[in-house]
Image 1 (cartoon, rainbow, N blue to C red):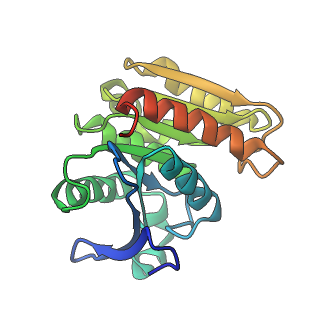
Image 2: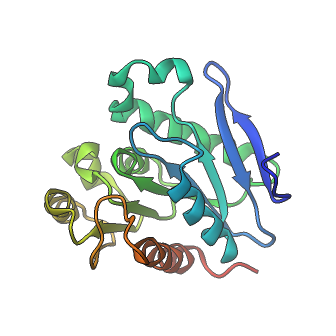
Image 3: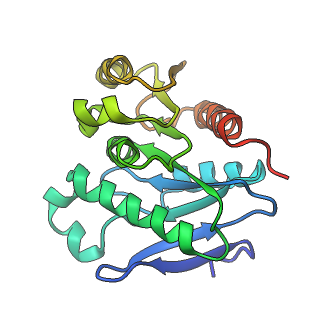
Length: 216
């Protein structure tokens, strides 16, 4: 347990088995699976904050380590977008079969390199209902994958994150699905400036609820 009754520590899959934190509010209609950036995982303070706020509007959340501790020792794995995307698909498959989450439409929330992994995974999975990328690197998904994404996608970028703004704009143009790009004023790459992460939360809540419907 994590100290909160609505959160559960568990493990997903086997060979490898990935550590995860699941939260399922009553009446949830969708589950948001988090794809963390390089060097981060299920304990990411920013993503845990976002997850808590998403549960407030009736969205289930699944935060997981996309790599095992052993895999993290090889830095190549941290930037292996295909590998990370395969782990997100594993999580979506698990959620579809788990009693508490079966029937919930899956979504992805990606940060940094996780944004690229989320879009790569969504490109080959028609189940994904929506994607939100926070300070993401959607370009890492690859042009072919971006063109195949069918899930409505929201790209959120900080105003001070110059090069990443350009990369997101190019990815936005390469995509053919419903998509939107939002620039948060005064925000850097990590959205550490006062109030900026709350703006991310607001945009993410609206996007997921819009494409999943209000929780009961």
